[in-house]
Each structure stands twice: as structure tokens, then as C-alpha cells.
Length: 182
Image 1 (cartoon, rainbow, N blue to C red):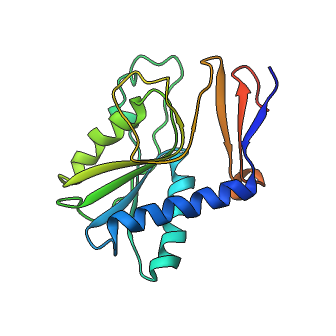
Image 2: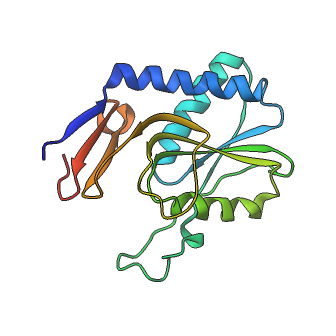
């Protein structure tokens, strides 16, 4: 099984732009909304979305990042020691419409733990989910995204690799066999 590109850099940029306009359509001026990136890889997407939204609406949008490590259901069971990252939410989520942002939706477990972690910062009016890639047939939990960059069907023996220009030198998304780093 060969690695294959599912989004090249041009389609990647168009997808980010489309997601921003979908958010604007639903949240207008973002007065009561907040974007929250999910650590570790969701923050790359959330920063890009936040930057582009701010350019389009021409004012700042509430933005934070959350690390759901301590809320994971496998926290103490994992063979590999989990290392927490920063959580930065400098505002209350009380009564806000929160858009959780992650790069790939696979089993739904990371999103479930992120929702649990969010409650430490207030009770949101609503929580929505934005993902760049939805691997729709791999859910362990009944979690569905509200905003999707691209939906793919993939085997469990494959993984989705998201490359970011500021980290990896290019914006691309690949499907690769799980045992490779391509």
C-alpha cells in the first residue's frame, strides 16, 4: 500500500478558507463565540483558522487552546507516558458558543476528553466541532463534526498524516500505512 496525497497545498488553502466562511455564516461577528484548538495537533489548524477569520471579520475572535491529556480514558493505562501540553483559555466559556478544532477525527475519544476539560472553564451554551479530516467509519463514540474539511474512508491499517507548512515545510495531507513515517 503506497502513501497517497488526499489534499495538496492548493486544496489545503481552499479548504481552510471554506471552513472560515462556514464559521462566519453561522457565527456572524463572533461576539458570543470562541475558537478552541485541541492539543497537540489541532492547534496548528486552530491557529490558521483564527488568523484567517481575524483577517476576514477584521476584529479579534476569542481564541484558546486546551489539552485534554488528564481527561483521557486511557491516561493511566497507556504504555507510553502521556505528556501534557499547555492549556490557555484566558476568558470564561460561560454562555459562549465554542468551536472545538482538531486536525483529524478518528475514534472521537480525544474530542470527548476535550469536552470534559472545557467544563473547567465555564458552561458553554453550545459546543461545535470543526475538523480538517473526518475518518467517518472509525468512531468508538457517537461524535460527529459540524464543520469538515474533507471526509475520507480509510482502513484501520492506515493513518492520516497532516503536514503543516510552518512545521513540515508544506501543507499536505497523506494517507499512509500505519507502520511508516512517510
